[in-house]
Length: 394
Image 1 (cartoon, rainbow, N blue to C red):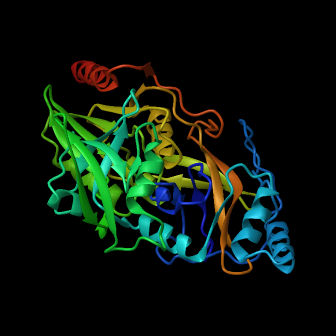
Image 2: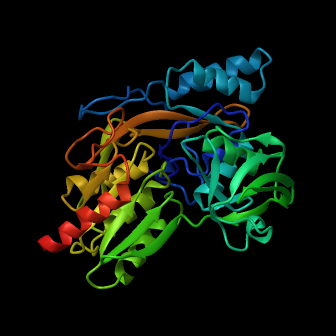
């Protein structure tokens, strides 16, 4: 399908101020390396939301969106306003609109590059924002910020209670107004001491795979997003894990990424065979694993309600193929396929053209994946217990 990009994407927040919250959104399936956009060929199908196996079709014909955008521009709307109005009229719940610059930045993010300060954060139950990771040699690291510090404010705005995606957007700034070199002031707290520090944003690369050794013959592989190179990193982690170790594949909070990398990740644990199917252009397409994966190590996939899109594709493949026991909470349920379309004025609209299914034909969109072993509390501890049981049963 040369020159035509398919995307499996997470739901988007309203566009304003959100450009860089899309860094780990889901993704380009084909053509990602070239960044090519589809032509004007129309789609004439309707997406399915439950287990049908026939061709899935778009909620909106692409030519209708292009026509609506052109009409809005003729009425004096800006190109981006025209695109947003056209897509809002489409009824496509997963549709999204990018400006030309935002789309270029989105593609860079899928390649593992972004502008930021080098912090990862999470919102605790009381609403506070705690820093969970500081990237080495990043602006945040050079400012002395540490894992476990509390982030209180960004440029004077209190962040307590905000969604993490919005905090990330504040830290990274708008794509056009906050390039590398711009300053951002952070309010922080550590051991009841509060202070502010100003750092300058920098061009950084993501490090979405973290590998650690746990007690009890277990290797933990955490994947935050499926950006470029993740599949090879996971395969290396599995091959170099100590003999006798089982693997916990932690996909909690993983909102998607490049589907080619998701398939490569599944391939690290499979010896060929089906990973998923999807419908587009009235035809069924198959995604297959590469041969040569490790099929012997005990494997647990750890998921939650933040596991979506390409991460659900991996989970569904490993579960249906009998390769992993899935532990955690039900996943989000985002399994639709988008295709980007260049609109008049240079903006880009993502439009739904189909849905993917697991090897056993399970439709993910609107349903999610149900774990084999539910775990709401200390899910990692439960995963370790299950993994230990798998190791003993060999």
